[in-house]
Length: 196
Image: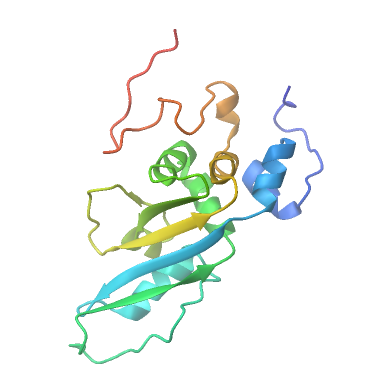
């Protein structure tokens, strides 16, 4: 049984209060959230694009992102038609906080789990949305004006981590989990379901 909303309960980590509000977390949620996944971010930059703006879009959602190599800023046109920026990030707090503020936690759970395996998942987010501090998921087969960021998460129990990280009080009334046939279709359209 969950405590009523608005009751202040001690949290195992004060930084998690922004994700879980004031309700208590289960033991599994505590373990999954405390053990953050390994994060790898990658994006391709065309000769016509500004690498500084693209770095700004990454750092808006993943402020501790560290590119694995120096980014050379050349005059236009650049000598290479494409370059790749890639590297790790460790703090998912700003990304997860944006999901909460945008109220897209169920959408995030669905989009983040479309390409899930036992210990990893990969999803894409819009660089333009990230530049203004928003999360816009880019689904398989779609292209994003302004390009996208590919985000790889690795965790021993990635499914439980995603479910816990995207949990919200509404799931007490309408329970959701990855693969529950209530999420969106692969093309982003809603699934029709009824409570029978």
